[in-house]
Image (tube, rainbow, N blue to C red; front, side):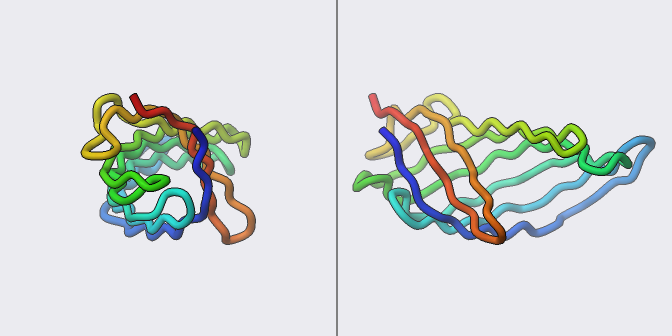
Length: 128
């Protein structure tokens, strides 16, 4: 099954640490989802920015709570992203066995699309 829609995101810096070759950062994540997935998420992100323009990495965990195509519950997403001089790679997967209530047994991958300032998602998932 596929779900699609838009979301608003707020990143709040919590800490950073400069070191040789990179700056390590930490941010709180808060999202509001609209569309086939309607709800909110909260989470945490760790990032590493390098002195090379367009090269960085991040990992994040966020818990999504809401309704997915009529089924209420929550699940957790795990992010792993890198930028290699502007070339982006991002994988967002559902943490196995993290689904609750009507979303118990969920698995899948989410893709984020950014056009201008608009964020949208495409979420390919299955429910067992």
